Length: 210
Image 1: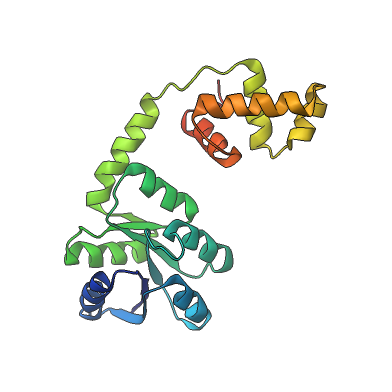
Image 2: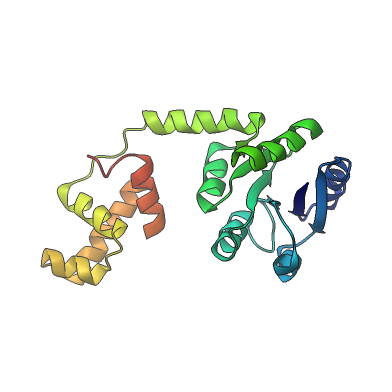
């Protein structure tokens, strides 16, 4: 028996998927939640093999919720649920800790088989979503990325290692103001706004190896 729970703020989808899953003899639906807060309140009491989490919820972003749950619990798999099949969305959910990605555009049979595959093999991406993911990965492989100077390359590696601006300034024997300006220029070149985005962009574009 596969023990399941679902969290999604769309009542129509909750009703539909709840009926689908309850109709399967090897599924036990232990909780259907219309908000992350209700799920989090009852999560410690649930018996779970798979938790289905909607990606787009107003109370807490689904990706943030997945990361929060994964930091607290490890005894079950999380599958992201979404009608958004862009490759970036799929990758973001996986990075947050999702072991599966199920498209809301999948058929009832595909959703159920996806859950079984997730339990059996430890991972699953719906066929509908995998096409978008492959496209994103191909684009990543084709991306050459911007050319970084030796200073910018030092800074991005330092940020990856978790160094502070002050530590970078001391290491390079320059002022803190200089480092702040150079980091700002690096963010502008990478089209990002914060450190985590810069590091991830550098990983995606394979800039650490150059």
